[in-house]
Length: 181
Image 1: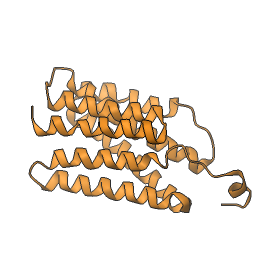
Image 2: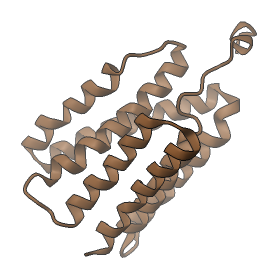
Image 3: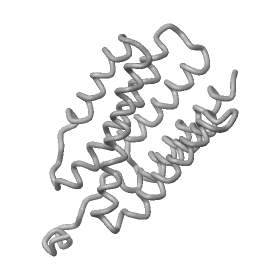
């Protein structure tokens, strides 16, 4: 078993922590699926590994984006808002690795962009969101620049998702809304 497959299990550990500490079943399930899919891709690598890897990753990115959009617009958004973009990854995977990667990058840009906007608008969540984004950014840089960096990326991305869980689902209180925040 290679280090990238083993480090994928950091997402499963993060998912367990999200479930136990934050009680967020959907996010925990998606983060666990990212870890399992990544393990499948980096470990046994069956013919369907791209679907196992790319779909959960797209789902967690879309989920984070929709949660941020929901908070920013002060509207409860349907799960369809994160399930539909995830479904678009299926044909992207079928087309090929580069197409799937482009769709995932687009989802990541939206999720991070909305999280940055949320940090600007929500001072109470700013520290949590900035910490998660910084950890994610450091992980991405290490993943690209360091030998065995992909394994480190897995661990730091899992930590970032755990940190982000503290903001997911949080909304302005009624008193803050009426005060115009």
